[in-house]
Image 1: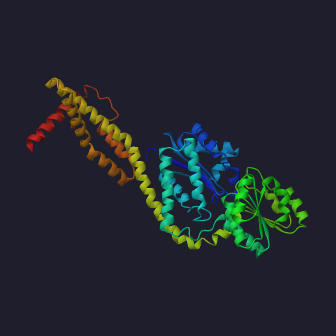
Image 2 (image 1 turned 90 degrees about the vertical axis):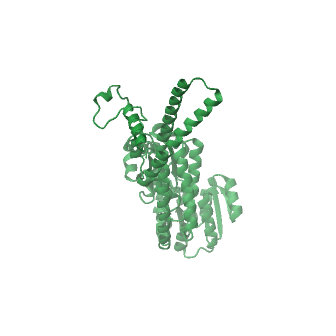
Length: 456
């Protein structure tokens, strides 16, 4: 494949939350434009969620290691982090391995909660951002659209999503295990996004008495409060209301802590040290990790939810096997498209050369037969161009067929370009005088064709 797809990323499997928050990309749109400006890539897309950060790029014609190095250096630079630390925690894929990974992510087969629907929405948001900024072009466009259709097919053909639990559900399950019974407890959601909405739904179903929704945008908090029941407040009012609640679930993803240790100390005094339960499902983390050192405070971050999630894994493994078979099949199909894409310049050159030869030969013939009217000339041009194109039909079909069979176009592209001299290699006029046995001049070819016809 001439167009090399490269993917580099880190997720909940390769990096702890402390590393993930350090290298989270909070300004994805500017990052994508920066990658195009500073790295040897033709297209790119960046995805940053609480559980993963990934960059998908289409490399220019430079060595793979140079592209990888530049992506690492730029990513680390944007986050003001150590490139070596980033490198230690990343995975890297190229070609069809990268394609397969994107399909796997879109289908939620690589999520902490296998089968959860949030990642597909996040990937669609990332794609829209890349399209708006002009960093998603032919290959990324096709790759992402295909990933969406693969995800839809897997949800239709398997039961992978039927037993999925969301991160928000896992958070509420953890709270239920700690408290035993959530009836009569009060909760606060910090942030009013999709995960907060899911958390509120699960809290209320499990008997939580009241829910306070704190958000930077009060209108969004009000919207969520009206749909689910609860009290909306501005996030700036959150510290003075914390003492009223037993459970806090935070999911803003702010680059700085929104709940600080000193705030919680004051809250505990007002609560007379009655226990509080904090769940931080944001990356970067919303809650200062030192909060966990306080007595009567129980702080859990997103990595602590793995045990809850793992309980639901067994029943999804069989469906995951079916889903991965779909991913493999669709990856092969995408590979065929990529190979056909790399064939296009050679096919265009073949047709151009054949048409050029046809028009030159027509010109010679017209000189011999003398002037013709415009209609006749146009008909002759149409004829010779049609013959030129149709004569290439079988060779082009052969190129496409063998490329699909072998999974690579390079060998056949090279063969076609040399056979038809598409790169216009210069052949000296005297080459026929010292040619090796078996070589032939244009005159030899014409004599061979004439004699072959007579023998038939």
